[in-house]
Image (cartoon, rainbow, N blue to C red):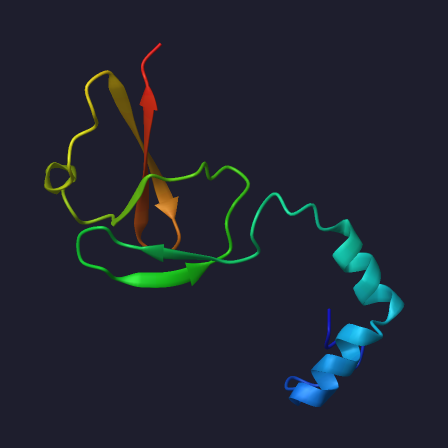
Length: 105
């Protein structure tokens, strides 16, 4: 969107500060539309090997308790607590599975 509105790819600190003080109408509207419910970017970090990447979260992603690379075996993870159920979500980022532990009803 910034390119569409003529902003350069890089701004100096002074230019950025001025943009923050006096945002153009399109930027002010874009910020007003943010709900703050989801971050724009998240860091995914493998619990086992510490590989990490930055990704844009998808609407269907819950809050993950653990994130692991898809080629690691789940047995390498600590088990869920007694009375908790483990769910796995494939297709997180470029190579991860998200793990969510929930309390059994």
